[in-house]
Length: 91
Image (cartoon, rainbow, N blue to C red; front, side, top):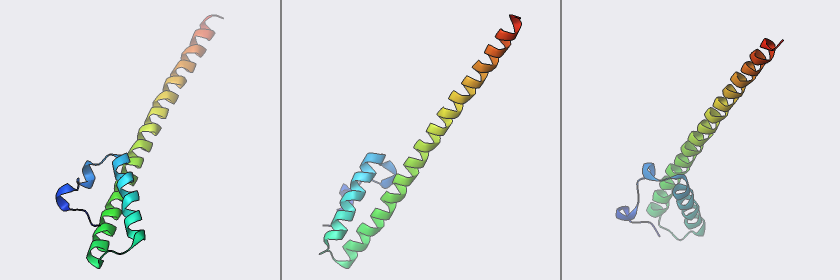
């Protein structure tokens, strides 16, 4: 059940969902067994690459979320400071 190299998209070009779905299928094929040693090793190696790709994409998404939250927090801090200044000038 090894995939033909002509049909396989390079791991670096896969988005998260594509990499995850292919990884799930790869694990399923390996768990079923019945493959030659060479095919099993090729699938294992591809699975390792897919897992790493998923981790990279998740780390990138996590970083984007942290940056967005930091920007949001900074904006709130600036807004709070402006409210304090505005409030103190009314006295």
